[in-house]
Length: 211
Image (cartoon, rainbow, N blue to C red; front, side, top):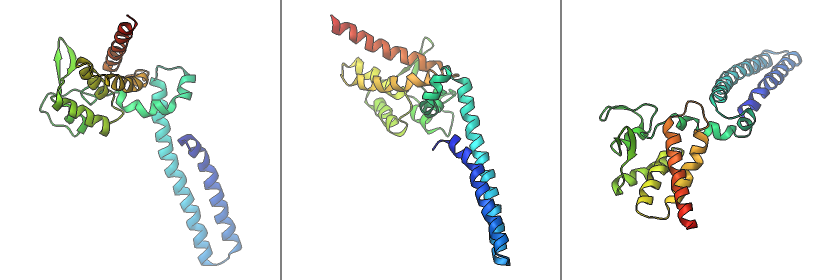
């Protein structure tokens, strides 16, 4: 059941419990039953307020995603699950966070810390290192953070350079995620760049296969 469905049920549940409490209070004219009805009414009120607060908070998050999304309204309605699923990583760069800090600076972001020293910049562009010790980290990230697309991009690139055929599997997984993150407004530009690189890799192979 979605959050929207739950929110719609809240007034009905509160009403039913409140009525039940009132009926008990009328029919059972003793202190025990009056206290029971009072507790039911108070519990229903607290439940309603709590669920409304968290439900509205979730609705506000969803509305923000909808406002920022670059998709049409119909696409948003049919793909809301994926937009919510990948919304957090859409704002992550390939370094594993929303912002890039200087090397050696502390952060409580485990993903960011795992990726530290696995990349370098050349001519203003971001690149991952290849090699066993680095690729071991990328593979670990695919397990611990399966929605983070750049680890698949890194493995696809490294494996393709060595001519290993399973690079395509990692490329496809990365593209599956980039397909959604690049449609979320405010996503990091590196998502578009990495998706383009993976598509270029696949197109390059398709051309060679046709020769």
